[in-house]
Each structure stands twice: as structure tokens, then as C-alpha cells.
Image 1 (cartoon, one colour):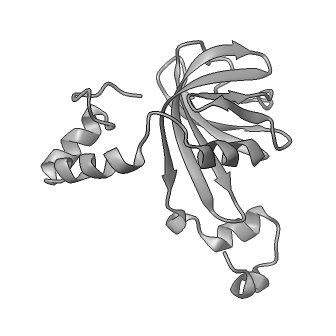
Image 2 (cartoon, helix red, strand yellow):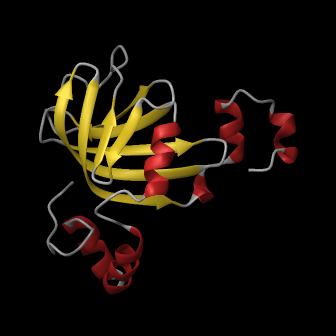
Image 3 (cartoon, helix red, strand yellow):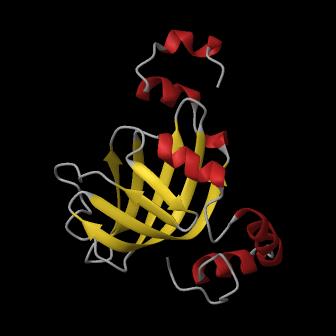
Length: 170
């Protein structure tokens, strides 16, 4: 997570600068205080634990951003407490981040339940790193609106016929 110019803000300096230019900094801080938490509430923890995959975002050694994923049977992600997320899965072949991950590094995690379009995000720090295990300390957790997850894309991902799109209620 980038440095924050206001240590009491959930937003980094670049976000704060843009919000200030648009006259939205105070409003966004008020919203953030309601939805961005320094822990994972029970519903977020439960969602991650039932997913077959999670998306990860981080920086490589040259500070280039990368997105990747980890796959497993439901339960391969666990949350022993509200500040910890554990991912027990190997990196995929040619994973762009696997060789660049290190203890202390910031990492973003997205859990997406395709069937319901429910998604939760976590900003975290890697506290333990093993070949088949990432242990993360949660810094921020928040849910995202499903508005921009398009139903047609979900049909393609779920390998469902597009002709059934009108009758599928998500």
C-alpha cells in the first residue's frame, strides 16, 4: 500500500490529492470510515473460505504491478482470526509474482464469488511465506459493489450458453 499523506486516512497520497482536486476528500473519508475496516468481518472471512480461487495483486522487484491467482479446493483460504488470511496453494506455472514475493511485502487480495457477483478486497502484508503457503496480516478489508461485474462475462467464465443470459438471475 502506498504511503498515506494523512495517517488517519484509508487512502494513499495520490488518492487524497485527486479527491482534494475534486472537492471530495472529506466526503470520501466519511464513506471510508464506514466501509473500509482494519480487520475482516465474519462475512468476508466466510466468503474467502468457500472460494476455489483468489486473485492477488502486487509489485515485482522493479516495482511493476502484476495480477495473478491462487487456486484450490474451497477451504484452501482460511482466516484463523479477523486480522489474518492464510492461502495454502502453490503458484501456477509462469506466475508473474511468485519469485518476487517476500515477507513484509504488501499484497492485495480479491475474493470473487462469480455466482452472486459478491466480492471482497483485502490489503495485507505478507507475514510468512512458504512454497505452498502465504500468511497475510490484514491492513484493510472492504466489500465491493457487484455493479461492474457483467453477467455476460460471468456466463463465459462459468461456461454457460449466452442464450440463457436473460433467464439467469444474478
